[in-house]
Length: 322
View 1 (cartoon, rainbow, N blue to C red):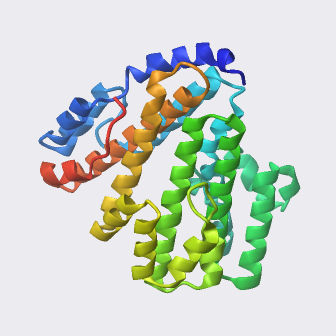
View 2 (view 1 turned 135 degrees about the horizontal axis):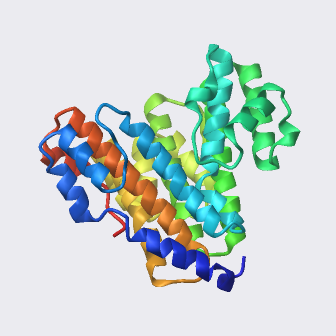
């Protein structure tokens, strides 16, 4: 897609950016005296949350609708699939797990995604992997083989998570756009650090780490895995020596602090797209901004249901795009 072909799409999405919640909007929700009041305020912001309804379903629908807006405005922007392809792999995991556990996977499938959930269910059930997009079909087939041979669900999940990250990187590189590529590489870096640290804490093997860690532009996989296998102290030292001090500090603080740092860092990257009207980066930025907004609303509404103090909620809040 040529840059100039995208001008109308960007203009259309810029209008929708005006409806994103600001820091003051989120602060008003945090200060709401109850869950009922917070839900009412969210309703005033365009989310149709009725009393007694499932707010999570409403937020899921809003996120899916925002993706529909993007692809309607720019149907040829193939590289934007980098932002949602992880959901396709999540759906494969859900389907395979449902087969093993004997329950219906339909209630556990995620939108937005590239392959419609019903189609994916049918293709996996019939083992028609060749009829799926190559990046997904080949991974689903191999994941099933791993599960069948090893009966190790964690290893199967790790393989699919890595395949998802590699697919994200592949789509991003198609765009040739610096902001989108930086965003996806940073997303992959954060996922790799989180995976490696958890593997250290749980004593995972080299086989697991080599399966679970994806190569990205910021690391050399062999060195990264070697540091993780050497233990927590060596891994944290590796992060410090390779320019990832902020990630190290967040890890040492708490898992929630790490998640917050990663989310804020990703939003910081896409904010660069505010200054351009060319290419697909502004469209990607809106998608990321909407996802961040939905995450913030989940934090607030869940906390209000649990009667959590406002100052604690505030500590957990992510940065906003506007």
